[in-house]
Length: 584
Image (cartoon, rainbow, N blue to C red; front, side, top):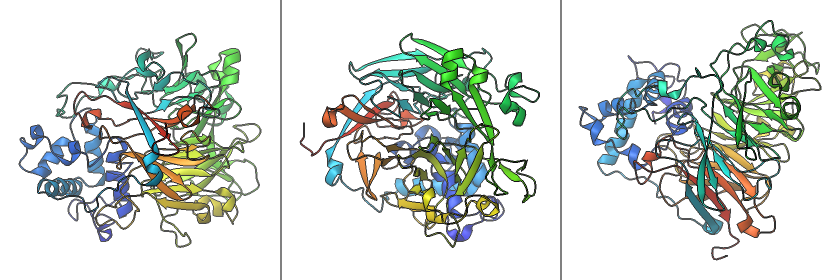
């Protein structure tokens, strides 16, 4: 890593790091860790630590080869833009130096540890469940509120930008099938419109991703129906979402554009139904009242969809609502007129914040928490109140960063979940698993002081991921990269209730935090385990360790990077813990 003294960057005529990159931690977040390269695929596997001859042969040196390789394929435009954003020349130099050292025989300074103790008790089951040109994002096996729903039933996978179907595994018969996803508007944009910026070493100029629906995540309800975050139309919203509408939410905060809506799949009828929502869906989670809560905005918005109203009326307009995120800045305990994010604060008014949830999860007390990406990033608590959106308020808690009052420092959350006690868990690009317990806050949770976000450092606890750190890194804890996390509230893995799990995407395994210490449950074959979504299920409550498990898809956008190369397909992975290594 560039040394801490190189930040903030001084630009292309200085040290090559962009001036907007103000710290080493932000460099790690933006170009290496989960908000950078490892947000889509592993770094350090054979496919990335070596430069393909088809690229190296066209380049004068490895720096030029890296400049070409980050343009390869349909993701090339985004990869190349990210290098420019952080300081292209310095980023190219860093990665070229890394692959040069490996080519000259350098090995990692730290050998990976062998499984120890209970790590040896894991049983890993894998299924192929998609074609070689697609990738997975999330999976769903059961109702998160009651994991006995859909016992022994099909497990569904989301293909995001890569194709317009759900891949389906029947684990009882080891059989796969597909559910075709559809859009409402034939003119809905497609990922096929994004052409390769440069030829891929694997697929040349072929366009392999061609999705209109871009299904990202799901929730399963009590009837085992699947509610998918899916694009169904062009970005412009219907008139009733916009200014001048009679919709209660649009009157307060109109939405002119949105992306994904919902698509409902009913396994009994084998039918899909498109549902248009004004706001956008990324992650989809139910509360205890059968209301779905969204993430992904658009910026400044939290949305919900009442499935009970939908089931009674099939009226998508009346089943949905949304609200701005409004802090109780005047401290009177209720929502009032507010200042906008670009306006000076007014002590007599509340204050709107322009944040976007990435992860989201309803909590036992009726609030809805979400993770906010960025530097240092934050957790936000959304309180609907008795009559949302008019009564909805929010609370804002930044990850402690450059805070002398904080006992711990970290940055950049992504995935998040809430345990049965209301404690929020999130994974950080700083190489930490973080918990936030609001009940530990000592100061006021509303008013001007609470609007800073740094008012409750005592609520945070950070656990450093196992494994080595980057050479020269001093502002993060570990080099491991965790995209998402999941709290196992029902002991589906077999190590206890309310156990936090995370995807160890540079350590080839599932990270399990038990009593403050990590276990790493490694997937030995094929090399390349990289996950995003997690889910669990109890098929037989009386079946011991065999009657339950945790499921994750292998979610790399480039399954052809895995051991086996081109033609390798994404896998569904099931984790179970035996009481001892020889238990049957």
